[in-house]
Image (cartoon, rainbow, N blue to C red; front, side, top):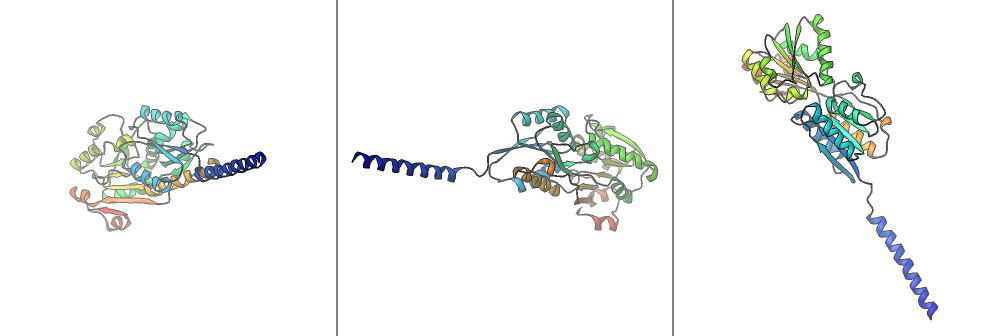
Length: 311
């Protein structure tokens, strides 16, 4: 009788173990939690659009947690944001724009970095064992030719930032075009607050991808309107404020490509297996209303080529 009772107890215990194991298997998460850090410089409409498309791809993925840093466009803020994401043990860090990406690459050589919205990353040696992403480089000769179709110019003002390396690359490229296109360049450094009030003596303006510059786009537009100076930009965010022409890599493509790269990392791929990509889709936005206010008319060829015309 004792042996019979003992046998029943033993079988019951075995059954409970089986049920417990089954419940554990049923309730276990499909994937261990992965922390994806994101650095998105504040005040940048382009990065906000890019981020929305990135979230469309990665958002909702089981076991993935986002930690977003939104620094102001200055070196110390970018450094603080990068360090925070490294310290918390991010498994992957996504960066929008050149300054955030270069800053983060100084902070870690082991955490996988996926970047987007970076102008010409290969020229800045952004390859390496822990970084990949998509370039947002546009054709500056095409931008300047389109700007010239509105109004000829011999003195081009270029807004850049000495602390943003991608804008320096754009300045160097523009300088190389001076002889062939017949203009001289005047530079305006967006590090200086209120720099727009120092602009003078130019008959056209180009805004580079500078984060600091785009935060003061209203001042640039105010000068341009007061002096009938046509404007162009290589990043979105100023078109509705009155920038006449904007030619930029499509932020939707940038965000989605970054998202696809992150999903590959989440699914077990090594970052060395994910090559850098170039932008294949571009936005060409023209503000016809702003042009008309300066007495300028958009050529039919420009309106036909535009992906958006602001009336």
